View 1 (cartoon, rainbow, N blue to C red):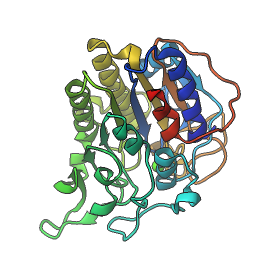
View 2: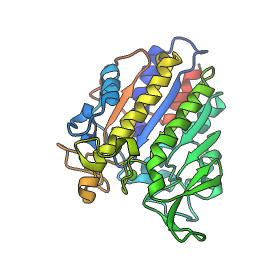
View 3: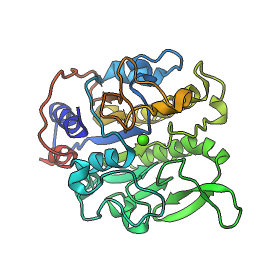
Length: 327
Ligand SMILES: [Ca+2]
């Protein structure tokens, strides 16, 4: 299944569950970097515990036949535009400070939803160009906070000489993070995401939460280190599960669960060459860099348990699919 088809599933759920035009459903997409099919409980993980994702899958649906693009930038371009990467001239992975990115003239799902009155925010790894003209704020997002590319793309700071990654707020670098400071990134993204939900509880919103985790180097938060039975990789997966719980708890507390579609998935499956730091796709054979199977997806629909589709046909892109709910 591709993200194009995922959008069709989302559309069918929204169409069947959203009762009236004025109750536009909220949309939350949680997108994990390099997470494998078997790295969370609903898809077979046993060493790390993911109770929040277990509950999400039990209350919603699991999508078990799903193909993602094999690398970060392409996967994200497809998710944002509903087009194959080659169609929107995103053939591979963008390097830091590069001259290229997703063309601002391409229409993203955020732009579609913004036109319909949605509040929009991106929190996390963008990886569709890190120069100002390519950032999320130029692609339909009201606001952005995040490391704009992979967390292993550190560059040497001109002042300190240490290897750092930028933390960008909207279109400006807010901080330079050392590797050790990356251990708070899930916590910070989560606080930003929950704050966005609370601030926009009375209007429709689109939250795109592409986590920096669980891409190597692995930097689980202090509270999670040594807690799983699967080393530091498992620790970071458990922190992601905690983050998902924070988002879902906020939706429940604000009584938004019944009109919020939440999608949880990963960009390209596990990075198998990283060994214990790279996750697992078992019993599937693929992973990052491969077109074999490897990624997973869960979806919590408004109104609770949905029916897992065995087969759906590709129709249209995420933007029109979600946006057509206005009528
Ligand atoms: Ca990735």
